[in-house]
Length: 144
Image 1 (cartoon, one colour):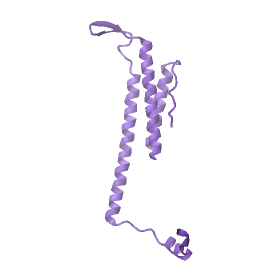
Image 2: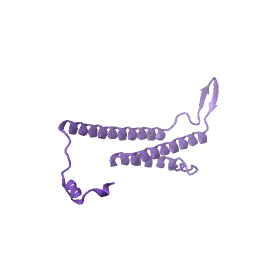
Image 3: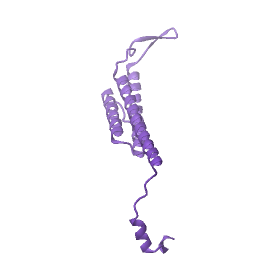
């Protein structure tokens, strides 16, 4: 279909300068790009903040582990292994959530700052898993 175009016309068209967007349109394009950049930065900040809050919550000692609590009028004793297992599961779930966020960030072409924050949060979660004990299993890899 395009093979029947004269080579001279092709050279002429290739030599023409790229058209400039009208002034009103150029302003709108810049505004949309700026809004997209701010939205990405906000998303990265929120993801980093969520990861940091989770990391801090996991690092804080639990006050009810191993102590009696009252539940429906009856004392209940929390078992430390069950609490540790719950923390390990929560940390593993957080690692999987961060992995999904990393995959989505790479898919949309995220900025290096956003990716660095996610990688740092993932490293913190993996350190928490390692510190929780040698009995944990690493989180399952994502199926793509």
